[in-house]
Amino acid sequence: MVSNIIYINQGKASGQFGILANCVADKIGLEFEWSEYPTRRLFIMAQNNELDIIYPVGFSQERNEFAVASKAVYTSQDLWLYVGDQPNFMDKGLSIAVIRGSPQENSLVKMGYHNVSLVKYDAILEMLRMKRVTAVILPEKIFIGLTGSTKLYSSQVFHTRQRGFYLSRKFAKNHLATINKAIDGCLSL
Image 1 (cartoon, helix red, strand yellow):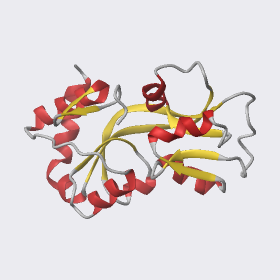
Image 2 (tube, one colour; image 1 turned 180 degrees about the horizontal axis):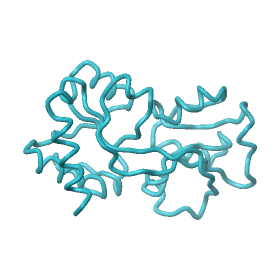
Image 3 (cartoon, rainbow, N blue to C red; image 1 turned 120 degrees about the horizontal axis):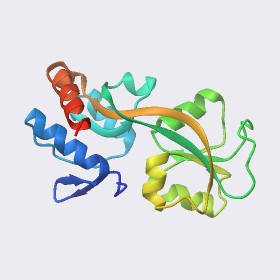
């Protein structure tokens, strides 16, 4: 996990979005049990009702097929990141790294990019630094969480996306309205 986005220690969440998750849990009277899994597995688990909530994640049409989105918690930008001269982002053969199972992966596939490496958070910027890819795409807040600064990289906006909670369909039937109300209450603090 990216520590200033959300950090899990002994079953408790902290960090910028962990605080909001704790507030939502308190307002709805539930205790969240935190686990970390690969993104694709999270959505399959939610689809199979093996997992109630996924957070924090970006909303996408593809993910809506697996689970139910809450109200948006925040809106952020996905960034193209590169080192040196700006690449031609229209070049469908551009070597790009994205997080496996991310909305960015789905967007690039739909746009016809065919040289896309799927990696984990801990490897993505290293691939760019080592020039194994020409560019990477990351949500801005995760990028800042991984680096603490933006000094080594140049960036350009790829996409703006809303982010929040995804709920399994079964869990959403009984809890979506309550969670959305809790989100409103927690965002106003």
